[in-house]
Image (cartoon, rainbow, N blue to C red):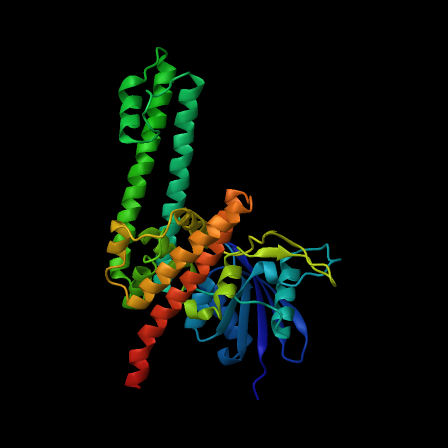
Length: 377
């Protein structure tokens, strides 16, 4: 008879605190081991038959390397959501040892919520799109430094010249000069950072395009279909797929909205029902993409040249969902705006409903891919 051992791991960059909860038995701490492959291998061997072991640890900055190592060794492992680990209200003592014991205890009781662990293809794509997101933030900071520097010294572009166009950059290079050498050096440094940021983003965009070409066919099909709705081009579609993985792991559109943290918070008791701001407890990268895309639905429904090109190779079912999204979300935008809602609130609401259409497209494509396999079997 198998005696399952539930192992809680409190993982840090250099160390791992280990605790074991035996099925129907005691919960004990096994101390601390180095966070190295050899140490983990010895731990698994020490704990007994690998088929009797169930490991868990919290998602964090150490990533999924430990998960992949344990699964390669044949052990079952789950990465759990840190924010959903039960916490006692009066507990004010927190140590690595106590955290490991708490994980083992709650894991045995079935009170932990596992997160989705991406495979190698999704993890690689996610690293790439997050690198691009970081590059966009760095470029924005560089632009702010340059523009505020020029503003402090009264340098204004000519009338009609829009910020950060080629004409604007040409004006900065040729039309802005300082008598003081220190200020001239500052200008050149800020300008260099802006140009470096733009080149970095262009390089990453090219890398994303190549990565999509080399991605598995199933993933490419979903990425292509997600570009059918208005406001979602390649980078946004890749971000959604990299952050979500398979759409079928969500039972419905509402679950996906909750995962994105874009549903309203609620504080209800008895007959009192009170809703507040969105929870923001989900995937921030997904939330950013859909809210940015929502701004495209300010305009009346239409299929322009760029959108028609993106829809050239998608199915009629996906095109129909995309058109339905345009009609519904534009009406939603106008209705909320007519009620006097703030534009930011309106776009968040539109983005939440857009996630529902994204889920519908993802499910449609995944189902279409599975049908030939089901007929073959």
